[in-house]
Length: 162
Image (cartoon, rainbow, N blue to C red; front, side, top):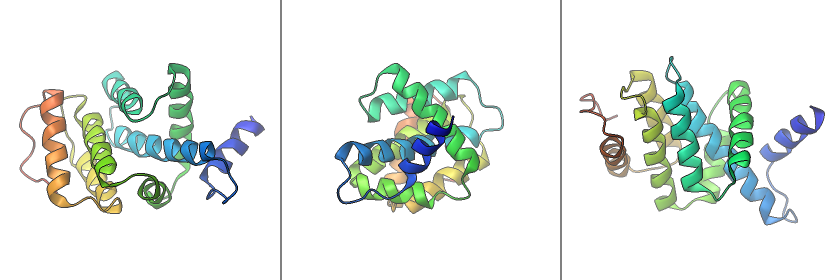
């Protein structure tokens, strides 16, 4: 238990210049997973569809084995419960991803939001907030939302795209 908590806290510290590239990659993976989990948690009725969408998104974003994805999601859920804001996670993503990668991540997050076929106002708010912190332009944000909606087979989205 103590080793797990130490690993978690170490992963949230800024990497030192001498830290291996793998440590930076793990931090980026955790930050990405936390943001995906936050979208999942923004739905009051989290179901298997949302969880599967988070797994699929992590599989699409990173080359990880199934047990690594399970462990990453477990750490992300614990970290998300204890977090007071998104900034420390979005700052890691901003450091590690270029704009195309961030837009793709937003699309994957929209897939999580649409996984159950419904889009709540709170899910939209979380998505808008994260996209804003990632500095994703509004047009790219809306296009990612439409691509995700089409890919998930969801019906027409509510009128507000903000």
